[in-house]
Length: 282
Image (cartoon, rainbow, N blue to C red; front, side, top):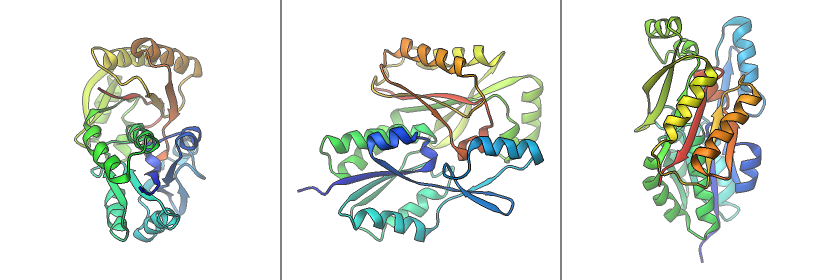
């Protein structure tokens, strides 16, 4: 008889508390460090706090993976309760947390760690898929193997309002950021082989850019209808979000389009008014 399976991920999956509860997914937070202060991502420090501090003194936080002992204790809490574990992390090319989890998992039988090669709700989509596989009776090893094959079908893209935060965080050259901001260019980014790459540049008002970006992303795609995400980093008018949710439903026929806020890890690099549409292709 198979052991019960617990699906876990780190806080960069950006799943709402409602979705975590619904799909019985557990998370371990990254640490947010700002000056002498340390916080837990999504627990006692939010992206709105982050933006406020940045506008006050120009400081951006640094993010850090949990330590080996913390990750080991996290896994042990489930294995001691009789569970096997399937754990998903943000791309190993973007954070060290996958390597920490992989090393911690060596202390246990039945803990399977998967490099999602994604970030934000690209990770979240795979975590939900894992939970649905668990609920269909798949064991942990089979779920992990399934996710390794499926992750190449996840579309994880975003359009960014400003490169200021990426520049300040050392993610792009200052000249590139300055030129893009002067020209009011809004770059669209995608996850490809675990790395962030620019694939298009938009110009114009955000509302127009969001609609054009979403329409182009959903055109000529055979999309799994179960779960599609609009994930945004804040400071977008609720009426605009409602219009975009309706657009995604119209384009995909998906009855359930999830709207989530990106957490501090993603928001510290992309800044406010970033928006993505994320889904799994057939």
